[in-house]
Length: 134
Image 1 (cartoon, rainbow, N blue to C red):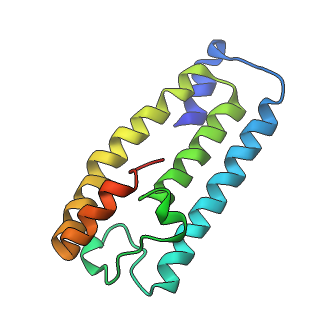
Image 2 (cartoon, rainbow, N blue to C red):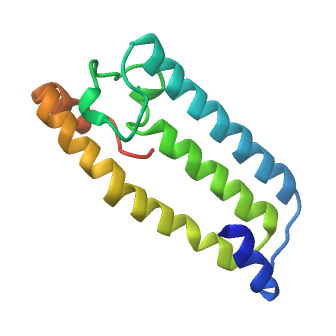
């Protein structure tokens, strides 16, 4: 979608020094954050699937999860941001807040409810200490 938007609204372009380097930095950061999140889940032997939060067997709250409750979604966000920056299009950047709203409403909030049901006070305490995104 970001790419299509940049093609149809090509007059909404921008450019600045080191834009490609910023896009690459965001891309690499996003990939690293996702890998750290997945590895932490694997080491804890709990489900990685966002479609089955009820299968969660362990509350992961250390490593990258001590900085963000959703490193995999944060990583995806950084990757989308890197693509929008690389395409140099203002309107493509509007997709970023839409992604945040969509993922929060349709994925994160239901996951949080399920995790509260599974882990109770431990999860509530974790939520109070660690931010949802960053």
